[in-house]
Length: 149
Image 1 (tube, helix red, strand yellow):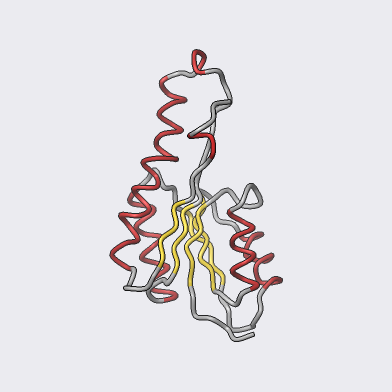
Image 2 (image 1 turned 90 degrees about the vertical axis):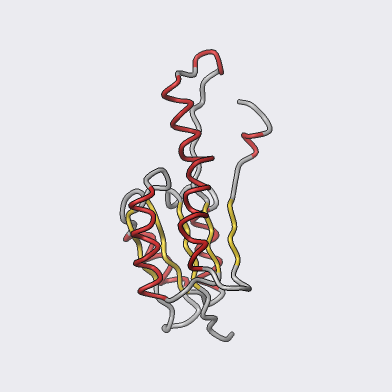
């Protein structure tokens, strides 16, 4: 298998849900991957290196939060400096608060909206200037927007 020069920005809580599985798939396909997470994810980097299709692939982790535009822009700038302009950028950040709506506080509601909705906008806005024609931006969402708890 040829090593692809694709880079991906994946943001998610690692080893939970689909974010880590997408990164593993990219690693197996020969892609280098930059992980954005609220905390650095060295254990995820180790696992991705074990999945790598080639020794030429690179994996890095940056602390960033999609609800914090400054940290997100810094992580994206670091990724572009490390890998060059991405061919693929994926935002898979998402949270939920499992309470009936009538028990949901304004703070709970704002937390979910700031990550799931505003965070997607922040990620897209920060990464779009670095994408070339032919690059791909993927914003992952949840069925929770259609079906309540």
